[in-house]
Image 1 (tube, rainbow, N blue to C red):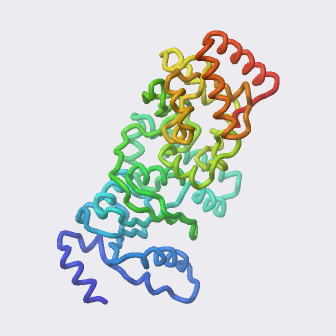
Image 2: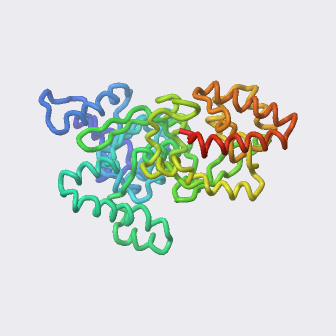
Length: 370
């Protein structure tokens, strides 16, 4: 086996041997349950499906990946957590470039939730919460401002990145991967993804407090709908994945949507997140009353009849949902269709009636969108 490994390394002369080696030891799982057993079991389960030996990376870094030949490998496995990678998207993009179509990438990360659980074992609450707040401000808030960004990277060198599960999965999908599996093992989240397409090279991900979400407007034109961010960064990239996994609850809400942050749920409850939509109203992208502008994925779930009539009309800030309060996705579609039919016949009258009914339901009946 040592000779085979050596032979492979010689054939791939451009690879840096001090960074990359081939290791087949994961195929032999020890019977005893040691600290690495579940990790080895996770990797071995995917490794059994391969036709060739994977590239095993000793270090999670951009320099390591750049030493791998492009479009030549069936699988790349890295046992070092990606929290210490400075340019994370470039790292994922390089792995995507190195894999064949459908190629497998396995890696691991310590998510924000797992970091908190680790710190809970180390510090009492009186120290824990202020410490977590300092970490959040120092690693997630201040680096958003250019004046602090350089200082942050100078001090941290990009090490010990704080990242949520949503952001990890979203970044992977944006970089051309399809999620196959992820599992929490010994305080880390291990993931297996496959190369499905080229990276999106998104230069404007949902990463700040104020975000411009891509929504379908009149005539099918894509527009930026402004909102305060209520989800973890890169959440929009896994909307389809989360929908396929969980389905819809009442109306059009995804069941147990883990992409929504705790503070985001509070903002949604009191419509604080929707205040920036006034910008779209003033710009003329939307009108006061009308069906909400939807993402391309959510619009794809609608009936063709409703999609066609939707595209003929400008979307609105106050949707007909607050008038009819449907409790099923089918009921929501029927509510929107009936509004659009009425609007096509009597535009001004329909919007006035729907406006006052919606305001009454919101203020008196305490109607909420979910």
